[in-house]
Image (cartoon, rainbow, N blue to C red; front, side, top):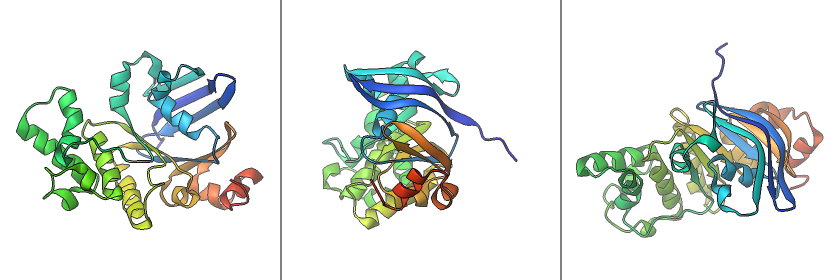
Length: 252
């Protein structure tokens, strides 16, 4: 059996916002090229964890943390924050296209990192849109406003925008919560294909979605890690009654 390589290691990690504890002594590992899903009811610390991974929480004056998060064995607190966010991009629940064309949305990141060559940018944009499985839908609309795209297309555009800066990890915070079933299915199919090249961490309130796409799943409740396992095992033979109750809809 091939030993899986750890991409992110979280040890004794706690999060506080003033007097409120969002996460308590979390320890877990996330492997290269897996879809790691995180489920749990509201106020379980899911999004707080996700935003700590690329240090977005640092912007909150009430934020306090303890413990460590390692990316490829290096403490993320020692990394340049802009480099960290390039390596670990985040996609939020609601898509936020820039008020620019489809092309310029994707080219924005590479340009910010110094890429000016037009032919190179064109290749980057096409590659990113192909990886996000959006190219065929927008290839004839590259220079039209991104805001004209449907909600599902805008979400895949935001995925492509992150892919254009060549991340290693992609963080998804409920990326399909505002989408219809067809758009949700397209985003989920994109996630499955992206894991061949990227490590994916997906926070979702949709238990069925975690079952469909997750390789492993962690269940958080009130800031505590209740259970973590391979997704199929977690959903069929949960070890903790609270996990089974949440999965079966008895609370949450």
